[in-house]
Length: 383
Image 1 (cartoon, rainbow, N blue to C red):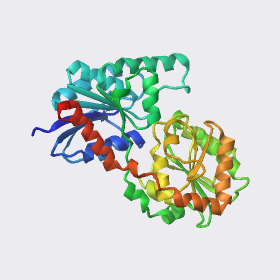
Image 2 (image 1 turned 180 degrees about the vertical axis):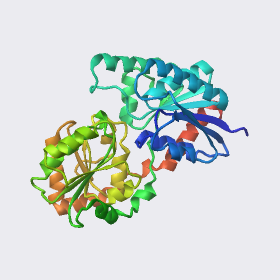
Image 3 (image 1 turned 60 degrees about the vertical axis):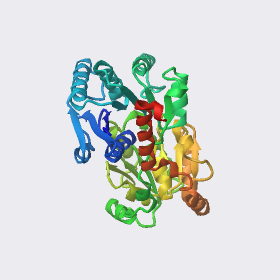
Image 4 (image 1 turned 120 degrees about the vertical axis):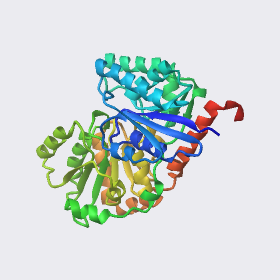
């Protein structure tokens, strides 16, 4: 049987859930049934990993970038079209906002038989001014006309897409963004992370893992840290990630007197070890698709305090393995974190139940479900 040729397209391979999802899929699709390619920008923290994936074809696109740049975007469409001509895919599977729109346009122009788009949270929302939000939504609606099937990482994203008129219910399938559960269920290295950061062995630690960009609102973590420090003066706070908001976070740290207590580690590849050092994990995002770090923390056995946005509510069980607070409610976030740090019995009870419901986020399950989707799209009569 001739393998199904699948070309994935994503904007930039930075450390993030969509990128991890894409790389795991590219690496783990059954090579007996699928030939796999990946098109992406020519920079990113995970690009070296992409280069090392065996039996795959990588297309690095110098003009594909996250920012809106009409001249570069036109060139990026040309680069995507050339990649498709070279790879001759049966299916193009796009991810992220920019590659999602440009990749689907290129696939349409090249006559690719089937097009799939994954929704890892929408790239438009209330955080944007109305004209920008309207433009992004219009682009998504246009690209949806060229899409045969959609993959949503959360039921909320699937429902929102239907409500926005991006697709019909029968066009979307919920496939969870899978993680390497084994790596998080038995993590090692927490003590080494503490030593590296100069955190005492007995000190409570609050961790957040997120890109330093407006969507993730990492400044809320800094503000919450300042409020938690009052009732929990021995606490340390670890913010893993990097990005455009770093200067603002560093300034806030100085202004709030958190130097020596708030650790900005940059991007790290040992997230299981970092989470193993944590007593509580937080999420302060303005919007999400399905935040993998919440699943990862629960798999480690760490309670989570998160702002109640989109897919978070499909992972976290309030009062059982963590707490949900209102989006933007920093005071409530700080209050729940302080409660978990002070009440050891409550913390132990939540930690004991944290990993009960994470099995559906296994990455092998994710890959198998995508393989089934590809085969159904090309050979509907067999299913």
